[in-house]
Image (cartoon, rainbow, N blue to C red):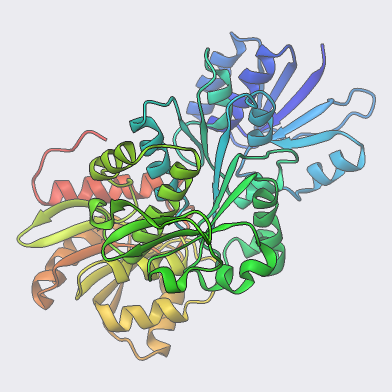
Length: 461
């Protein structure tokens, strides 16, 4: 029996281990952490003949090497053990690549980009499903890709949200349709340079048969047709702003399809059918419609799905209204660009809750947006002192370090009344790992605290 090692006991790692086991591999799943939850999973997986080693980092006994190593998305690709594995000639791949190897019958839509991936992926999946297709969303959203590969029946389409980490560890993944939403500096602590980050993202699009790009993105529009001569481009600004002679744009309130220089422009759906606020969501809408039309989905299914689309949890998610003040959860804004978009999308003045584990990046635009639209800023987490200094440096004085979400909510409500702000916005501009396991748990905590504050019963999520 061939031997494999899976690193990381998250949802992806467990699904990868189960898939390998089903395909006849001996599996050792390891995680450097240990906890009650992990111990419980260890016992459960033991009944499936999957060995789990906790508090353990993979080591090599050269007399007994695994033939394959599968890495969960959160594990850095360049840690010493993986560098060593590749030097030893051990095949090392990501969980997404493993799923692809057993899921090549259905075509894939692969969505990548710095921001906008999750909304675009969810919207594409909703449209495909409205058309009666079995099209699960997976990757960074919904299921782990290997969970889809484990299903008894292969789906009609696979809709994958694919991060740079997952592209980096996927050698052969080749979607039918590739979508690139935005490109700004992020994850540079891992990818080192912007150019390297771009090249990693580009790998996915180069391997895609059909390509869709956000033509309103400053960086992508600059590389434009010279890098991507055959792509379909999108623009919320109208036909005159379309890069090249084919793509999707908004004109007179409609999403218009132009499939070639000589084809007749065709209206597909009213842009106002999407209930989500912000120009960036109009861009996401265009890319989702483009993917659907390239997959030959009819206009009725597209229109129905968009009208019914509820939005995405943790991305400008309206939680509740208290005394005329909207509480909005934008926990997924884990970098400056996403947080800037979050502030731009809500009514001002707003009370902003920001902070967490800071990332490298340019905060200029975000700080300018705070000066223009935030009545006050409440700072939480490790980044709070540094953010306070940055705000002070640009002459913004109305901030307060409150440290935790528990303290932020009542204070935000009080300040909203004081400054007649109509919005309390959690848009952290930071990762969550200083105080929470992930941005979802952070957003859930915000939601719960808001609902407790306004005296509502917790919603089922």
